[in-house]
Amino acid sequence: WPKPNVWKNSGFDIGYWSSGCEKWFQDRKQRIRDGDVQIKTGEKWRSSLVRNRKTRK
Image (cartoon, rainbow, N blue to C red):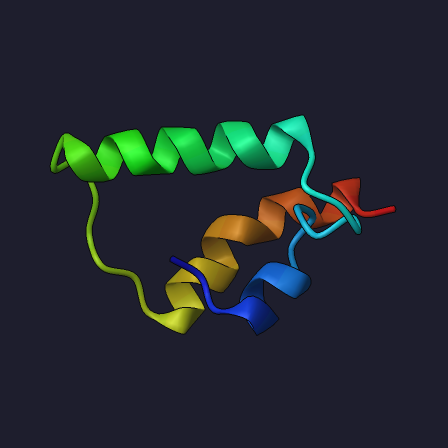
């Protein structure tokens, strides 16, 4: 899971837990259960969440 500072700088941190955040969380959790994820470094998290910055408030 991304560290708080990485999450804060992503487009998901809009001040509340949105339906988009919940969908992302549930999808990620299911992929973990399915064994379909790899451990990410902080930099990998930043780059994977960067596409969501445009949606910030």
